Length: 369
Image (tube, rainbow, N blue to C red; front, side, top):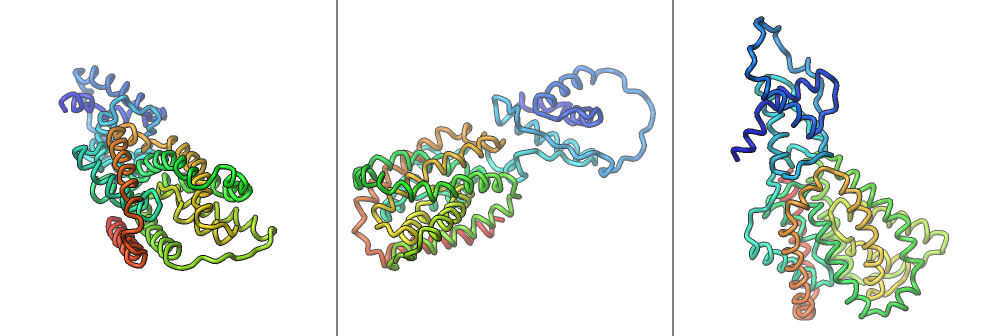
């Protein structure tokens, strides 16, 4: 930690100098200015009293994370030190672009042991496997409440893990429904993708711009939506709206957009929403709808993932690569076990229990805000 403290020396003065000169304040520029400040700190200060200083006299400081250092922990320490040093001097604190206060205070890297991470992933996989899903809806609140990740960091991690789980599940799904049969329904996938790709980009853009407290509340509301979708899909009998082509196509685009937004903000594949949509709008059976949902989910997730990669919070993925891989391995193993338990518990018992889990998670997320 000593080398981090040493890097932090003079950083507050460095930011002040950059602000006065009007130069862009990036990590690299702050580091250079800090070095200049340290070398000049031994010089004799010019005597004279300064006028009283008001925090409102300072220009707002915005720090970009585009030049993130090799060590994310070191970069975070430097940036937090900027805000602390300026606050101690009675100056306006720095605002870190791409990292909210909640994210800055949350741990960048999980400190839990790998067996615990694997076990949590396996539990999530079992829950998802018993209802034929990946379990990302259950993983997200666990990343926040158990492992202590901030909302946006948890969403990005959840998105990355969901992407791997979907890629793993795709070959198995294609064995259940032949590729030729799925290909015969390509207009359905294209119709939904026309909206979901735009929705994924928009949803991810909104997520990175939200205040942390707002994002927690949005996630809580979406958890309630997922609980309702779970009950509707697995307990009630889905019919078909029997729409004309002229009504079906625009409704498919609108539905795809909404699903893309929800999937991007939650970091999920969106199968819980896609499957009933495909059944209701396009009249497909549940099995075919499940396969088509994966074909829509994959490119939709890639678009959201690409948008998140442009934000500074994406660094959480690099810092937790091993964590994510171990949890994914646990999720895949759990999903296989969950599939074996598919008919052990009746839907009238299992589905309401899982819906209650989602609702309890929603309450916790709302309180977290």
